[in-house]
Length: 314
Image 1 (tube, one colour):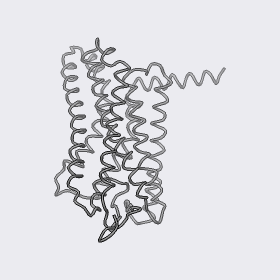
Image 2 (cartoon, rainbow, N blue to C red):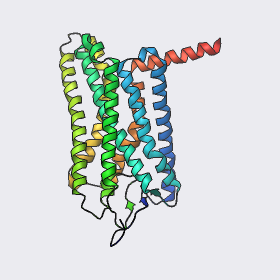
Image 3 (tube, rainbow, N blue to C red):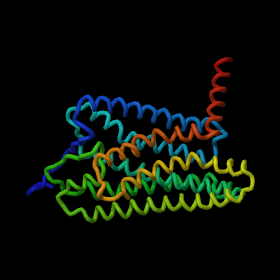
Image 4 (cartoon, rainbow, N blue to C red):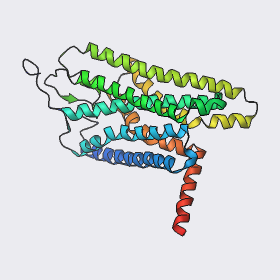
C-alpha cells in the first residue's frame, strides 16, 4: 500500500459527534447509562430464561439468543465510543477497526435473522399448533440459531476481508463514531464499485429474506386470528406477538429510514442519530419490550423473586 499517493494506514480517526468538551461529557453520561441498562436488561433476560423452567420453550430460546446478540452488538460499539468521548485523540487501530466492523456485521446479521426465526415460531404456534412440537423441536431451534450465526460470520468475513485489503489514501478520518464499511470505502484510493455492489447485494438478500419471512408469517397469523370468533381468543393469540412486533417495527423502521429515504434528504447528522438508535438504543429497549409487554416474563420474574425471598427467609 506504499508509494505514490498511497500510504500504509495503521489507524483511523473517529470524528464522533462533536468537538465540544461539555457536550462530549453529557454524551458520555447518556451513553454510559444506556449501556449499563443494556447490560443489566439483556443479562437479566438470559438469566431469567435459564432459571425459570416455564420459559424453556422455543420462543424464549430465541429470545435468550436475541438478548445475547443485543449484548454483543452494543458491546462492539459502545465501549470504544465511551473511550473516545473522554480522549483527546479519537483513534482506533487498523486491526481494531477491522475487528469492530467484523463483529458489528456478525451481530447485526444475527439480529436480523433471529427476528425472522421468531416470526416463524409465532406463525407455527398460532397457525399450526398441533404440529408445533415437531416443527419447532429443540433440534430445529438450535439449527436455526446456528444458521443465523454461520450466515453472520460469513457476511462479516466477506465484507471485512474485501474492505480492509484495499489501499487507502493519506486521509484516515472517519466521520462517524464507529467503523462502518460505507464510510471506510470512501477513504480508499482504488475503485470500490465491486465492494459497494457486494455490500448492497448481500445486505439486500439478508434483509429481504428476513423481512419477507416476517411479513408472510404475520399475514398468515392475521388471517388465523381473524378466523377466531371470540374477542378473548383473538386478544390472547395476538398478545403473544405484540412484543416481537414492537421489536421488529423498531428495527426495520430504522433500516428503512437509513436506506430508503430520498437522497435529497441525506444528512450525516441524521445517519449518526439513526446509527445510535440501532446500535445503542434498540439493544437497550428489546429486553424492556419483552419484559414490560410480556405476562409470562413478568410472572417468571415474580416466581424467581419469591423463590429467592423464601430461601433467604429460611
